[in-house]
Amino acid sequence: MADYTPDYVGTVTKYVFVESPTMTAGELALRAYEASEGVLIKETCFGLQVTGEPEAVEKLIEEIRTFDPVHIFVKDRGFPPGDPRRCRANLGGARPGYLGHEREFRVLRYITRGLEELDRRGEEPEEPEKPAVPPARGKRPLLDIKRLQELIETEES
Image (cartoon, rainbow, N blue to C red; front, side, top):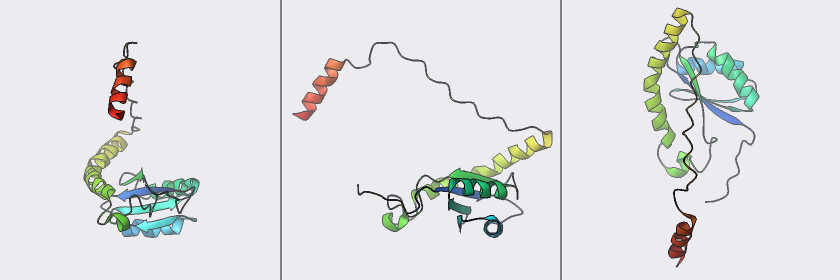
């Protein structure tokens, strides 16, 4: 694989999804532009893509979420914008991650209902439990080191 030098070193990109009966992605974008300070904002079909220094992005997202807290959701973007390893301009067609967004977007209304119900009850959402660490296996290795060496030597010849 070729070396990669990102265009936006030191920045983060987050996706902002809006699934609201009272606010469209366009309206959210207009409000975000008004509140942004040095943050790149791109309107998408599902909401926004926000890129900038981590502190500025977090500040903007805090502001954005106040507009409609139970209908606006945020997630990190794995690769920076224009990254040739994932950019559709280099790969052709839609970026594979967008298929995931489509699936996730269908679930948002259920999360919204849960948040509204918690709000109605006056409860705070609980932090998710961390997954339990599987118990350690016995001290005996699964594969004897001598057998492993034999397999490596067989493969090399």
